[in-house]
Image (tube, rainbow, N blue to C red; front, top):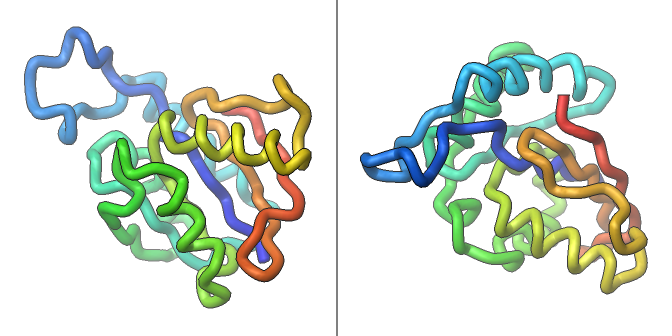
Length: 152
């Protein structure tokens, strides 16, 4: 089973944003990255698209959802601060094979740390740049292989 863990694309600066952080949108560059994800992920079989309900995450996967004719499914379990356990719940659910999981930097950071701990990637290999993707292959609910796709 494979999962596609995407960190949201570039959004406006958190420090300059005065409103509710949950509605901070993508910058123009972020929207370009989001649009480019359609081509970046074209060769992969995607069965569903789940995202944090934060606007910047939703905007990151909208073009991909349109291109694949899939619904964007918002889930608070992928929101900022929810930790790695949210991803692990998806990994343990065979029906979710082929799912895109769009989330935040803190969760992607924890994923990378876990992949290093499992010795599936070397320290410093890959990353967690905005709009980047980790393809995580899972067996019996546990990651067994991972590869990094740089941000478009």
